[in-house]
Length: 273
Image 1 (spheres, one colour):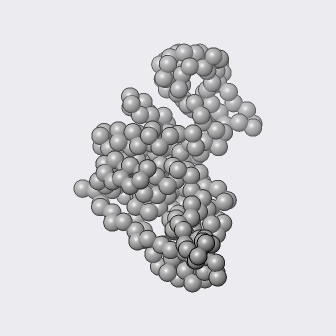
Image 2: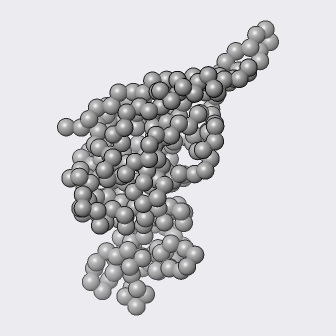
């Protein structure tokens, strides 16, 4: 989404650059990149093949548009300063970063091809640098279904952020979602029994503003099964555990003769500083 303009050495966004300002160079590998911009694609810079640089690889069109939308919504806000896209911090390069209410925040738009190990390492590195990270998958219609099968990175985020995942909707609007455990009844040889399903019951919280409704939180390292959460600095919403009451209210309504739901309490969270 960004490149170095050789004319003056300034970092520019693809949406603001002009072709007659060429050449542009990749901030990662310093190779010349081509400006691509049209009516059907989000503006971006592209390497010439063969591509060996990892900078910006794996980004979908949706990913690029999300980054631009967040950046442009944050930039004019009075409570935001030093907003930048793809700030080079050495070991990490957040999609968008800024001081929000004087809190250093890194926003990572979650790409589905990013491994859990990379998510964990980046989260750890941000904490080491004193930066609070917000991982943001993009909201999709399947989250409105009665049952949803979270992907591995969504399960990781759910544990890391104390029982909620934050999804980007538009601009600064973020949708928190809690995944309540779901038990399915299995027919055995002698009797039926209940088994924890891979599917979860999504329970929406109130939509949040990325600027007004989030706060910095620190958490200790934690591990269970395949999920390992490092000591982290996280940017989370301020609303209490809406899903506890919602789960109680909806439990009876969701039961059938063959299935019923179960839920677990939210984990405590500790406010930073």
